[in-house]
Length: 448
Image (cartoon, rainbow, N blue to C red; front, side, top):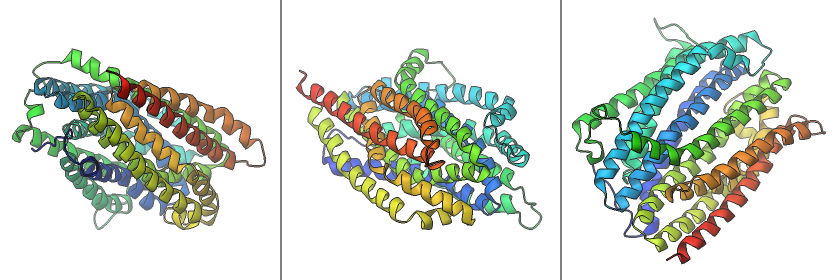
């Protein structure tokens, strides 16, 4: 398999060559949930609320797997920049070993405690709660395979090749697209499974991706995975991967936890409001998944050049990325602010849902530019091996959403106060993290 050297050549071309497949892969991951929402939305807002409630634990799983993924991707990229292939091999295998350990642990915990985990949201609707439990107990299978898939994808991207993960994940998406309507609504001899069908489709899709990666590792000449995964536990490298990945993981986990607390507040307004939070999150994921894809590619670009001590390319890579993501953020803001009704109607056709949801989309729209800058800059920090600053900014301001939401919902804003708490904190996060990175970058440039 071909890898790409990012420490020479045109910076803009190198970034786009790496970023476009990464963003494509990120959109594919987003499409899994979005397709589920589109089909389940045809069942009704209660079903959407069920999947949305259980979906928090799938979302949380992403934060856990970052412990293994981010460190593996950054360490592979930096060691490739240093031309230390042997170390890159060790960190690759350590990343997969960490993914298997974390995946098993998380999957077993969620399955065993699935009922109290759903009860946490305090939704006063037995139908919603029952469906959420049934969805979650099947979806945990997808979670385990997703751990392995994400880490292998990160390792390959860290080596400079983002095309192969895109192709593999496309197979998973096509599997999901095919199975979703069949299993949700039934066809011929296959009965309608409702929300459980969506969970089965996701699990099958993730398994298909894992199977392709396993076959690829065994049969390819991918130099960073020539070491047997089960021959030796690379504890030192697992710990080093975790050291880099843990701040990012904690930030993601706490972000999910704070969102779950907000969901408890939102539940006061009923299942429709809960469904809108879930659907709105899927719509906004178009922005943050794009920014996340660019963040991942920028992390690899900066990681390789940081390892090779190419300071000017590190700086130029960030500034180029900043210009690109600014253009995208402005476009997303305009779409969400100007066309909220048209956007929300795609997912839920019910009039009350459209009324509440369009207001949510419009309010979130104001923060899209700085949210994109925040996520992209996280990747720049990660590429330099500095994951603590984004975590500090993210955790503190995400935590501020809770008291701010409680305060604003007591005013004339009502439910809209929750949406404004998200937008206001996102704006501040983007500004602070960008300024912080520019200060770090300036010190790095003048350091001998």
